[in-house]
Image 1 (cartoon, rainbow, N blue to C red):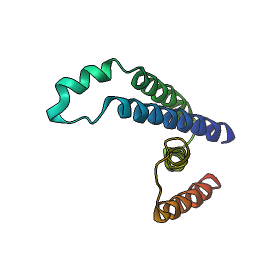
Image 2: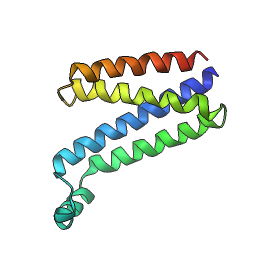
Image 3: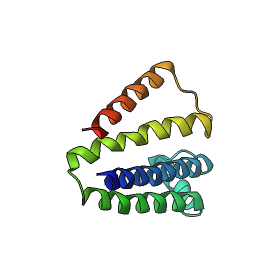
Image 4: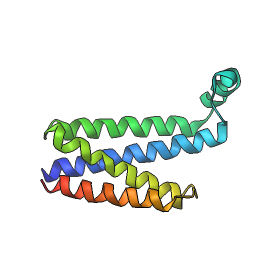
Length: 120
């Protein structure tokens, strides 16, 4: 089970990294909406950060598949919540987003839940 836990953690790290690259890329591109598709999609296709983000998520998916090939999905899937915690931390300290105290408290609840699940 230790191997599966490591694989899930690696999968989450790649997924979180991918999401951060996607967010940075979209910050450069601008808002995507139906009314701006003609302008926004070509900008998206020229933004390398989006490709890196999607590639990172794809690599994470391979590690995820390796993890769920070893353990029950009911054990592994809740551990993906680690991604919420990491995204919150990186959003605050890398993207400099404001995080409310309620969001911090919710994240603490998630951490406790992930710990309990990982011990079962």
